[in-house]
Length: 578
Image 1 (cartoon, rainbow, N blue to C red):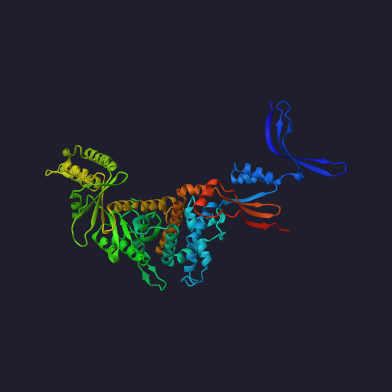
Image 2: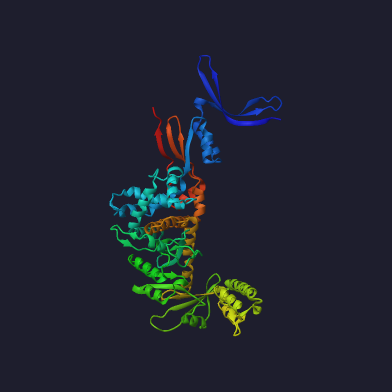
C-alpha cells in the first residue's frame, strides 16, 4: 500500500554542457512507502521549461482551485512564503450600501444641506459629516449593529468604508447634531429621489406608530425636578421626552418615546417622526399631516389602523382635500359602525378568500363609506381563540359560588381588568360569576370580519380592502427596525440625540427596503451573500496591495438586480520602501 502525502508544484534544474542552467516545472505529489517510510516524488503533469511555461494557464489553475477555499485561506495558499496576509475585512455590504447611498442622492443631499457653519459656533467639514453619517447607517445594516463608541472600532478594524479609515465618537455625535439640523430638507430631497428611481405610487400612505423603551427607572419628568435643561442662553427649558405611555412593546413599567412611520404601498419608508412617550394620537396625526403637506403631494389617502379612528383625526385628515382609510373597531361603541354591520347586502369576492360588502350609513355631505371585509378562513381561527378564552374563563370562575362575597368580588375585579375575559364575564343579581352566553353569540357574529371606513369616493370597495392590507408593510418596517437594525437598546438621553438616532435608523431601513425591492429577496439573505465579499491586504516584495476577492455568481446577480457595477478589483497599492 502507498500513502499519498501532498501535491505541489515541483521545480527541477539541469545544467547543460555549456554551463547554462535550465529549470523545469511539474505538478507532483509525494508517496510514502509504508514499509520503508521513505517518500518519493511522483510526477502527475509536466509543464515544461520554467522560462517557457504557460503562466496564464497556471494562474487559471490556481484561481480554479481557490474557488473552493475561504478567501483568506485562498490567499495564504498561494503566498508560498513570498506574500504576507496583513488584513482581511468584509467589503460587500458596506460597498453596496454606499452605492445605493449615492444612487438615491443621500450623500449629495447631506453635502448640499450642511452649511459651512453648523450653528454650533464652529466650522463643519461637510464631507466628514457625510461619511460619519453613512458609517453609522452602514453599521445598522451590518450583521451586528453596535453603539456609537463600538462602531468607531468597527470602522477602524472590521470593515472597509470608502473615504473613512477611522472616526471618533465625538465626530459621530457632532455629525448627528448637524444631521438633525438639516433633516427636514434631507427627508424631502431623498423621498422624491427614491420616488423617481422606483416609480413609487404615493396615492396611499400607510401610517403607524410604535414605541421604544429605556432600561432605566428614571424618566425625564423625574430628571427635570433635579436638573432642568437649558438652552444656549442659559434659560431653563422643560422637556419631558422619555416618559411613560401606552407601550407597544408591552413594557408599561419603563419610560419610552413614540415613533411614527409613513410608508408607501411598496413598503418604502417615506418619513419617520419621534414624539414624547405620552403623546396623544391627535398630536401625532396633526404633526404628520402638516409636515407632509409642505411636500405638495398631489393626492394622498392616509391608511391608519383602529387606534386613530376618532372623529377629530378623521376630519383633520380631510383638510385640504385629504382622505383616509381607517380600521374601525367591530366591538366598539360607534353607532355608525353598529349601523354598518346591521345593514344587509351581498359580499363580492376580491382576492383569494377575501370578500367585501360596501355600506353607506347616512346621506349627509360628509358621510363615510364603510366596507365590511370577510375572510372565511379566519372564521375558524376566531372561533378557536374564543373557545379557548371561554374555556379558560370557566376554569377560573369554577367553584367561585362557594367563595365569600368579598372574595368573589375581588375575583371579578381581577378578571375584568383583562379585556379578553371581560367580554364574556357576567355577574348575576346575586353576585355570582357566569359566562355570558349572549355575549358569546354576539361575538361569533364578528368571526372572520374587519370593518373599514373611508372618506374617498373614487376608490372601489376592493381597492379599499386591498389598500388597507398594505398596513402590513408598516408592520414589517417595525419588525426590521427592532430586529434587523436593532433600534433598541438606545443609550442617548438628550432629545436631539434620540431623534437623530431614530432618523439614522430611517436611512438604514430605506436602503434595506430599496435593496429588497430591487433584488426580490430578504435583506438577511442579501447581506449574508455580500458579507462573503472581502477586501484582503497583502504585503509583497514590491509593496502592500489591497485586493477584493472574486465575485460569486450570487453576488453578480445581486449587483445586476441593483444595476450596480462590480467593485474595483484593487483599492490601494503602497510601494515597498527602498
